[in-house]
Length: 259
Image 1 (cartoon, rainbow, N blue to C red):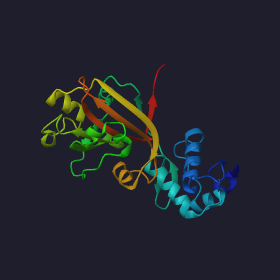
Image 2: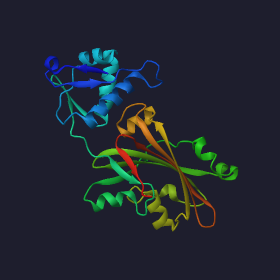
Image 3: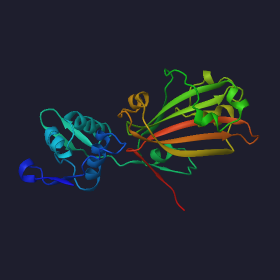
Image 4: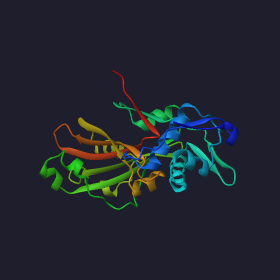
């Protein structure tokens, strides 16, 4: 572990974990992870980080690598980069908390707490094919049926936290493509307009990374860590209602469950 001396930087002592060249994780991501650890555990709001050159020396990496790590931290709201002044620890918003077993729409919990939460139907986005991870969870007949693709952006307090892509069989909800989603919610629209409520939904949670398109929509960095939730919902007669892929930004969302 390396230490930068406060007498030299004028910002107090700051310890860093060196970059592991053998790790499959990119150098910039290791620097980002280490700086985030220090911000979470040690560095107060308003603390001025060392300069890019000083961080480059500390971690033994290029300034381009440092710049990429700081850019990722800035996109996630961990630091503020002020032109001509430096980089400072930001007043970090609390992560949005999701329960694994939700009995009410997630937006309702934030509305009850007086916060802004909404889903935005991205109608200008091109239709996307269903991922293989979802196709293998349904029957070949269901996979071959015509389905409608819908994409929604989830926002809390004007901050993007996630994206949902859904594929709905056209035979189950005919005319859905002509509907304006109620409050940007597919489930609410299916329930109130088509009287369709799932009786059984299976969810699968894994870890992923943002691709370039997701990074742009979520205002985060390429390869930012994501929680990925794959879901398959069925009606009480066994018919497929929808398949869904939802991604939540790992730095902005945490999950909760009670045993």
